[in-house]
Image (cartoon, rainbow, N blue to C red; front, side, top):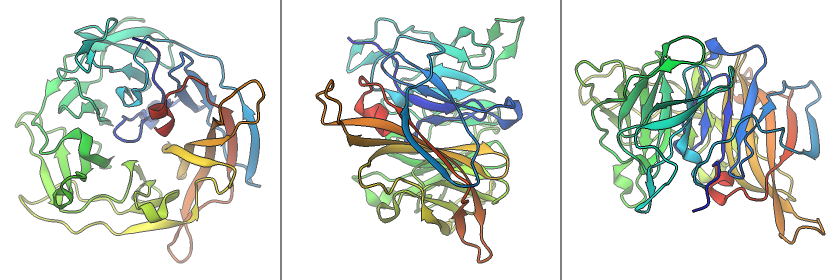
Length: 372
């Protein structure tokens, strides 16, 4: 079995999972002054890219830059980008399964998973979740990491430099849905309640949005059905305090490439009370590339913090004109730094101050990595 590092894009400033969108965020309070993107490719070349600030003239630099030098390497199966998660102030966890299609992964421990600290740079180990999931969902919430199993991992206890102690994952009440049906999710600004939308393709009438209070562990907690509707996002939505709304990529096929936002649902709800669907606001501008020479492959949005600052990481395919490479197309990462605002009419606008940069993607990167 070929064993390389699957792809994932992360920012060492606020950490997230990988449900459908493989971006992993880490608490803003623990953020360093300089923010970074962490790019993990399944060719064994994870690397870091500075998250550059926007410029006043909306600069676009189409020069394809090479990925920066690798900062660490770990052995893992190809094509599993959703098995990376980040939490606890700057740690990347490689949560790969112990077996794939019934075949044991030779380098996967039964009890431990690799944990890399992006600030201190040591590689340590943390506890493995009790269950392996084919399509895992990891959500950092309130200094903890929630897994779609449904399990909860607390932040590690502090020890002398180079040593940390994780408690085992705690099993919580299982969700009334399968993680493979998750379309979007968001964390309430209370830092403890998660909202998850599901939309099974084979049962459209089962579409719904659920919420769970991760701090109510003593009583086991209860999943609440908020209504038979879904959040308007694809993958993770981020709460922005300046906009007072959740923000993410639009899931509507007719508005692909646009951002949208919606009001935050109340964290507490009455037993069985059905809440109305949140009304969305769609960004006036399209964020995805409109260059006819670039074909969209996959994308994710990262919340940078501050005054509604965000970063888009989009994979695009372009014609390959290299005589040394027989592939008909090659892939680039299109990284866009931008900010959001409401205009005088209350419309969601992407600020004119933007910076667009392109980075080459390694040839060996798998299709699932490129789409995520």
